[in-house]
Length: 490
Image (tube, rainbow, N blue to C red; front, side, top):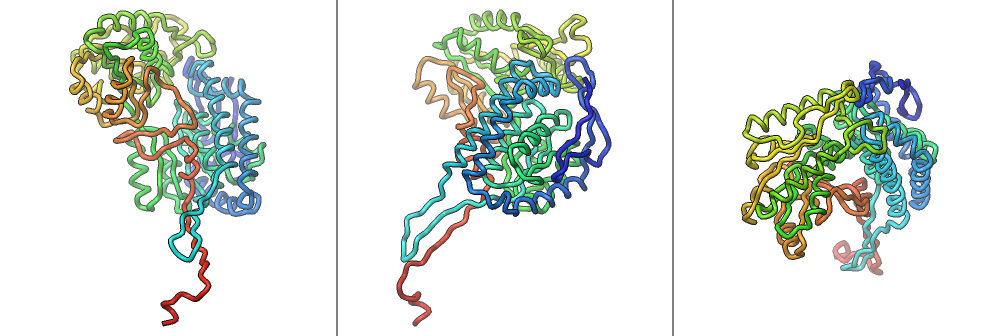
C-alpha cells in the first residue's frame, strides 16, 4: 500500500528539501505514503517563483472567461478521477468511502461554481457625482497562502484554490502534515487543466515550520486558514504585523435545539448525523443537544436506539457509517474528554470506550458516545472535542436556553428543530453563530457563504462574492469636464 510521492514545488515535481516522513492509514496503522517535508527555504522558493509566474502573460494576460475555462477543466479532471481520489482520501484520514466520494464530488462542484462566477463576474460603473465617470474594479492580490486541515482535505482545499485562481492569484498550499495527498493531486489536476508552472505549489510538513514561514513571507498577500482556534489566533497576530487580510475558519461547539413541537424522527436523525458523521471530526459537529423537557425522555430513547445501530468499522466498506479517528493521539485526546465528563458528574449512556474485536485492534477507533447530566458550564460542554461525543442537555425556559447556547467562546453553527416558523426566526436571530440549520443539519452549498463569529473565526468562504476575498479594490475617476479644473485657473 505504501507509495513514495513527490510534490509540485516552484514549478517542478520533486521532493521537498526537508526530512522524509510517512503518513499512516488510521484503520490499521499501515504506512500509506512516504514523502519529504518542506523547509522555510522551500517556502521562499515557491513564493518567489509564484510571484514571477503570476505576472507573466500566460496567467496575468488571461481574460476572465479564459481563467474560467481552466476551472471548468479542473472540475472535469476531478470527476474523471473521482473514485481514485475518494480512495486516496480514505487512506489519508480514514473517512468512510461514501463520505470521501461526497467530498470529491463537492470539490468538483466548487470549481464548477467558481468557474461560472469568474466568467460572469462584473466590475461596476458607480453613480457619478461630478464631471467624471467612476468605476470600481478588483485586481488579484498576488500570491496567497492556503493552510488546510486533515479532516476534509479535498473539500477545504477546493474552497480556497478555486476562488483564488478565479481571481487571478497564485497559491502556495500548506496541507495538514498527516494528510498531504489531496492538495498534491489537486495540483496535478490543475497542471493538466492548463494552470501555468509556478502558480500552484504544495508544501507538506509541520505547521511550525512551513506555516509560519508562509504567513511571515513578505510576498504573501493573504492567508486562508481552516483549523484550530489557537493556531488561527497565532496566524492573526503574525498577519497583523503585515496588515495582511485573512480568513480563519476555526473551532466550534455547536448547539442543536429540539423544541417541544419538533418532528422527533427528523430531529433524532439530524442530531445523529450532525455529531457522529465524520466520527465527530468536524468543526460544525452538533456536540451540544438541548432537548425540551417535555420530549426529553422520548427523544433520548429514540436517540440511543439510533446510536446503537450505527455501524462502526472498515472505511473501505460502503456499509460503514463511522470509521476510525485520524490517529491514536487524537483518540487519546477524545478519551481524556470523556473521562473529564465522567469526573464532572456526567453519565455515559452509550459508548465511552473503544470497540472490541480483532477488526478494531490496530486502528484508532472509538464508539459513538452520549453523555447526560452535565451542566452547560462543564468543560466537556465548553471545549471542542472534535470527536464522536454528544452532550444531552434539558431545557424548558427559552431565555435560559439562549443564554446557555450563546455561553461559549465559539459561534460557528447551530441547529433548530421545530414546526413553527416564528420560533425559528426568534431563536435564529438570537443565536450567535455564522450558520443556522432549520429542521436539517450539516448541509452545505458552495453558493452560500460560510464562516463563524467569536472564536470560530473571521471572514467567509464560498458564495459568489468569495472571489473578491482574493482581490484588492481599485477606483477609477474618468474626467469628462470640457474646461480645466477651475481651482488651478484662479
